[in-house]
Image 1 (spheres, each protein chain N blue to C red):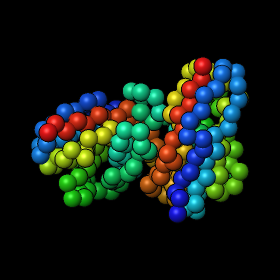
Image 2: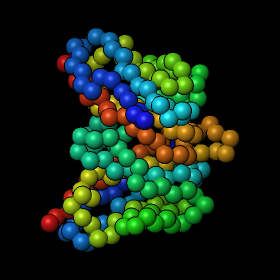
Image 3: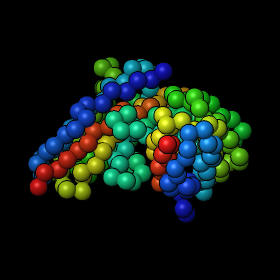
Image 4: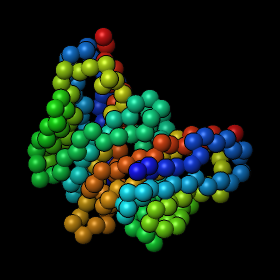
Length: 113
Length: 116
């Protein structure tokens, strides 16, 4: 059981470039999430997917898009990266939305120059 | 939406002493309150959680208390050890029985430092 796996671990982008962060879970969880973590700001929800086929905006969705490809996979896309998107990104999953343990991936450290 | 405030931002205690971290939340409909521990460079991991139908939960040296009337909850760590040094996050969410909740709303975190 790998849990939640996200790729890549590190990425440097130039302003205006695009990229997709990949996330997969093998726990048969219904709900998946993307958070960003910035110093002193805690973890802020970007987008979430309550179940396969649905996605919704979180607290800070601007500049991002997501795709729930199937029950296992939930990807995050930056269409035109900006320096303000420099952050550590965490994917997470939980069995039920909102009231069960969220399991996190190992994180992606993204730097936009 | 939900807003979670967490205090203090940094807490330094002597090894063996107790540590208390406090959080308040804004939405009275919130009913699930987990605490996560994040070691440097690692992912957040759940250490304890509490639901709104109980006021206190304990797991060895860790306990969480919830006061729904005042809308605050606290993490208590007793007999602190060096491995307790980490950043701790509280969170809150609304979890209606039929689903439909958002993800967790996190506090900004507390850096707990255990002094030898």
